[in-house]
Amino acid sequence: MAGPAPHIFEARREALLATAQREGVSNVVIFGFGSALGAGTLSHGHLRFFSGWDGHESLSLLVLGAGVSQLIVGSPFMLALAQATRPDLNARYVHPTGWPQALRDGLGGAAFAALGFGEMPAQIEKSLSALGVIPALSLDEAAARQRLVKDAASLALMREAAGLCDELFARLGAELAARRPAWEAQLNLETHARRQGADYCRTWLTTAPAADYPRYWPQEAQRTPERGDQVLFGIALTVEGHWGHGIRMGSIGPQRSTHAALARQVEAMLKAGVSALRPGLPLAGVEAAMEDVFASRLARENAGRFRRFRNGHGLGASYEEPLATNPFRQHFDPAAQAAPGDITLAPGMVFELHPNIFVSDLGGAALGEMMLVTDEEPEFLLRFPSTCQVWE
Image (cartoon, rainbow, N blue to C red; front, side, top):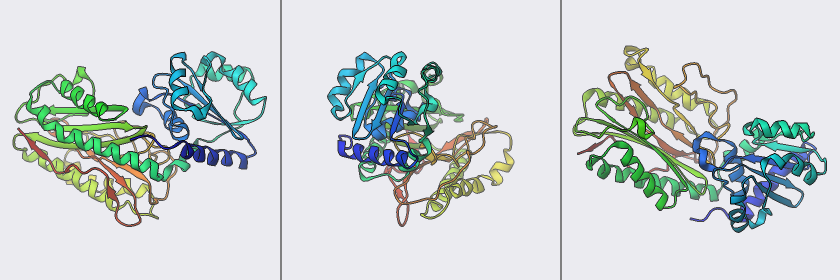
């Protein structure tokens, strides 16, 4: 599927500029990494949302003013691609060391609002300051609010991304049956996703008698699946910069009773979270509902033995959409707290809910669903069955 039409990006940029103008500023400069960092960047989501551009391994600037959009790419190897795919952005190459002068010349000393500058490399930011090219204000929160409710173009791409996740879930059984190391199964599945249109795909696959944590990398995914193993499989991919994400679980051969108890726990947590995804309610209530279920007899009996990651996060042009992820504390970091602020749920918002539990020497469970908030019941965007699978 092709990405959104140029007029959609133009309308998004006009809305952002209108926000800046209400603050007395006529120009906006957006910094962004490319998609190579995957889930490790928020600035790429902003750049992609407002321009459709992906610099891959390189840095880029999008300079917006009255009736003008200019894309400055930080790698000469990206210029031909930018000119061919984003002719509406007047792309040109400037090495990042030359960005301060380019901005000063291009803006003529006029004030500008910044977006994504929090991820800008310190050397570039220091050079900007040295030339007096300093943002008058940040639009990070305003842009995040603009992105909260997905338009039809974004939802169409997220549905396609969800469909690719379903394909990989369906192909997992054959990969497990081949009895090859987990990392090889991941590579095959990620390659399939790329062949089918994903522009990025990263998976984790944990196969062990007692699943211990999400295993992403070949060095930690050397085990060959065996009968009796637990299997937990997570997918995060993008289609035209829009994320699809999901987690499924099961076993090779019959499931052990202890693992079934963990699975029932996360299933109950997910059900509680989904029930709280209603328009007009606070997003923080979703996390609270799942945590209420977590604080059960199972949690009390295994206190101090848990390893967990977030119960959920916003999903869209970023893996963890800004603002929409704030209420979900990163449990993997014992010192982490929920970020300040909350939002009110509204139709068109999309979240990944993935309650999870890993108990030392006992096993793990995780279940992830892409959820669309609607006027009525929330919609499950993934179609592959969420019940525990039994593979041979």
